[in-house]
Image (cartoon, rainbow, N blue to C red; front, top):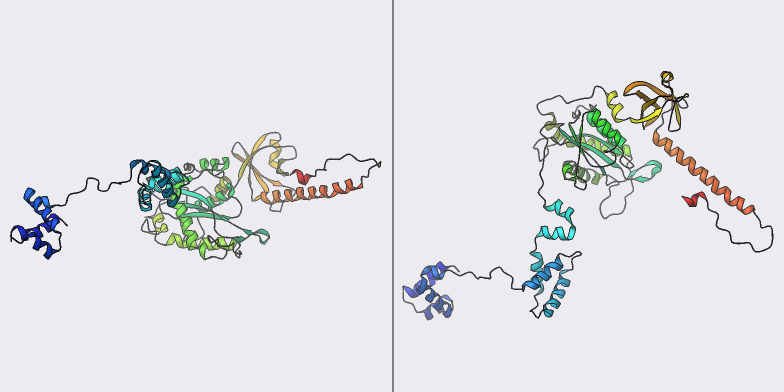
Length: 461
């Protein structure tokens, strides 16, 4: 009750002469309260009737040493439960000969701690940074000024080689200004420089679908510190295409937040309705899609995503990228782009019988004048039936693997065949060694000294 409300009651006594006893019975206010109000009024007027604030209002009445004790335990990792905190605080209060606080008081002290302080103490600087540090949200000034590229392992199982379930990966390239998806690549196995190059190739070159207008060479490519992004091949390609590589701070992916949000949208809007989706807390589903079907589904989703209005920019990514019409920076030809992105450079010396690479021999008539000289070769890991030969960045010729002139061979297929051959040879060795050992018989009847167990190649692996 404020001072004015008190005066409305007390005025009946001061101005109308009603006794305080009758006033107490009529208003339900205690007689001693009315007497105290009357004394305050006579000493200071109506202003004195305003309720006074306690000097300890809002302050804890728990002894300071107990408050410090509770806060120290609450900031210790792992934090005890409130029940444990209360029990330990009661024991500490008895040791200090103080009145023990109630369970509610202990909880109130813990709840009053600064959430940022609690996060930093219990979860570490990374969690504190992600939740409480001020973030500057940068947006590029125009399309193709900055692209972001990143990988994610998709929450879905598909049917892989040999009908075995596999969890695929997705590499995506997004334009920072328009939020448009410029290119992507769905694949199985770990991310590699080649898969990244394929996604970037699709992003840079013109698409067959006229609705997918995004293309061109970006000024800046924002990536993480993955081995594919930091490889010499990717660095060489970026220099040749005049792309400045911008690496995010290790352990701090905030600079690539736009592409991370797209991954979340893809997961909740598309993958969650596809068969084989890995829902949290459920058993592994039986996959039914293959890589081609998943690629088709993601392509359709990206087309719709680029066409619909984006909440943050107020227009569709396609509209924002096209803007008022402009010409993106393009490579001279698709062949030049493929030569940079999809071929890996290696250094070799031309031998009398050609160039030796990955167990194959490559020959071309033009190489006759280069015998004994070092050259640079570039090859496509998806097809090593031929290589391109350069002399100090000058193209010389295409050399062919004469053993397989009309057969398309990938580096992965070659390596798989090599591993299979080694496994078969080891199996043959391990099958032969026990039979040879079984034919050995002791020459005397005397006790044979203990011989160490015969080690096989399989055991040494």
